[in-house]
Length: 361
Image 1: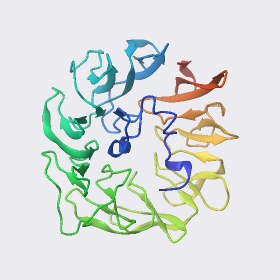
Image 2 (image 1 turned 30 degrees about the horizontal axis):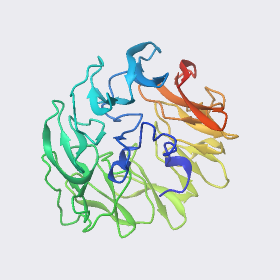
Image 3 (image 1 turned 90 degrees about the vertical axis):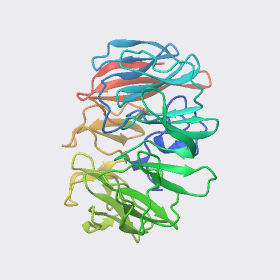
């Protein structure tokens, strides 16, 4: 949608070994649909998946192994539990590493959010609770995690996308777009959800009412109570009511995080602006990611580094791929070669830029 790397959280093919972005569940054939950062609002278990000698386990923030490597795949904790592939079945574990449901027949699973998780059984998606019971029966062709009591789903006959409430009922409103199209970033953020109709983007509230009519050719979801939208060939920012807060002027613009947003005004490189639209970190990076926990990933000369909000590097440019910080750590990846094969190794750094887990595979 956006055309630059600001919103590309990771290379999808490279990370299909374990984690696919949440939105992929509507179309992806991968078995575990999740994001390494887990659910943004409820990821409170400070354990992190690591790969060691081909098996996945979990470390704590200090790099100590807490749950021994034993899983074929493992995702980040969200809502107190984590999705794993155990004995070649998809299930969930608690923070002690105990399997919650044995002998499941889930074809795909997503992370828990607001006490529910979307799972696919016999080609249909429904929602289970933490006891493994269906609270919304499998009757959707695609389903995403809940946010603000709402979830974005696709009807069984593929005919429409819609939002449902916690009971599985469709959210309907006279001002909601009649025929919503697929939107990758479909979670409610700042009480607003991005919607698309006839290739134009707008925003709805939890009741389904349109608060910003679909009129933008490109747009991003809200973050820090602002959303980037494109007007003609320039990006600016609107507030939750749809009023312009930062006039369209940027060639590229990303999501706000910690009060700063990546943007490009007049060059081929990126910097960061504040909520007044003023650059506080000058355009100097080849690619950038949004700030999270007062750290942001930036690319220089083909490698990723991390900076703080003052624009100072906390690491050198030495990583081949990175994830954002969550719960104090960021996962980083480095590549090595064995013959003609490219080998991925996964590690973690803390907010000082030091390894707590050196890359392993």
